[in-house]
Length: 149
Image (cartoon, rainbow, N blue to C red; front, side, top):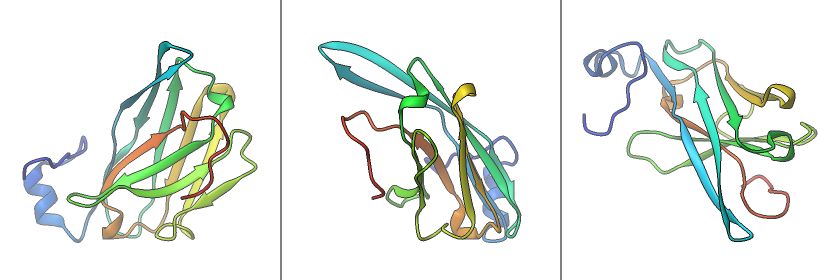
């Protein structure tokens, strides 16, 4: 299947054979670039975790921030199922006082962060086949505090 990212465990054939009985959750590394006062800087977010899980199981994804002041930024989680548009999953404020979840995961997700370790996590519980997606963490690179989409 072109464009299908399969996590560490399993092969494309195994993934296809187990759907919809398995949930494929994977996190992808990404880099964010932004321009500030004419100087290009690089912010790096590296996601980890994921794999094949059975419906009803739980999974935890982590997001490590590098090369920027992690504690000063809200952190957002998004996901994208194969062939679908990007979907907002969760947001957590810089001081963890503001946390919101997308309706698809609202009662099953938990986000938390440890700014001293520059890491944030997303835990998904009672996984469903529709949770199969690539998961991304992101920070806003515009001035001001973001709000839930």
